[in-house]
Length: 244
Image 1 (cartoon, one colour):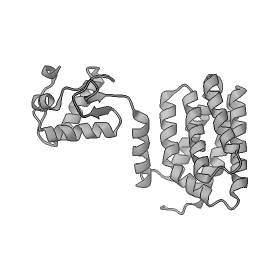
Image 2: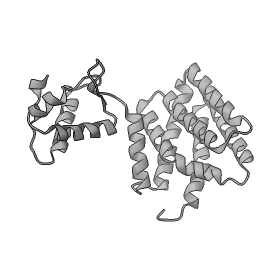
Image 3: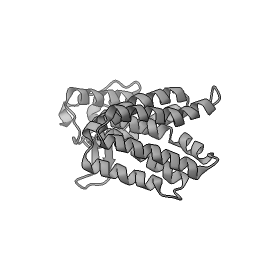
Image 4: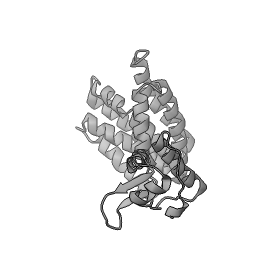
């Protein structure tokens, strides 16, 4: 396999290494599960230093397409993987924090994604997924559930509905968007004047969303999901001064 690799230009070396690996993925020469040659073999074949190669591999780890394990065992070395959820969520959170996207952008993205998710989940959710959603709602309804715990349950509920839609890309994007606004939602929940009442109202909305999904009423579930998101997330937009 090492003989198939070719030297790259020396300017911006690690980016050129990334381009070389990307080209092999796009051409189908590298697939998920494939192992890269050891650094000591790959670096000279590419005509780069091992430090430049390591920098490129770190970037690939960050974006969730490479897993690197130190050592000499069967799992050691760098292997191509499919792990987009955490990586995409991390990148989106950073861009959101840096102002690349506004709260309005995130609101509209959530509405589009989650309307699709709830409508599809009403058709495709498995018994196991419906049972897990029921457990999450029951935990939300439990008296004394704290703000941070409730926010975690809320996030897991929406991400699981997206997964139950049967569309992996929708699931990944929904998870990334919801995780990006998690800190803002948490702060908003923490400022609720009457948290027990707010928690009960939000739990009731989630219970009704689940009832509609279970009943196969996709359009009604999608409409309620939009009202649910605009009602709470929309409040975050209204309460955020321009430029924040």
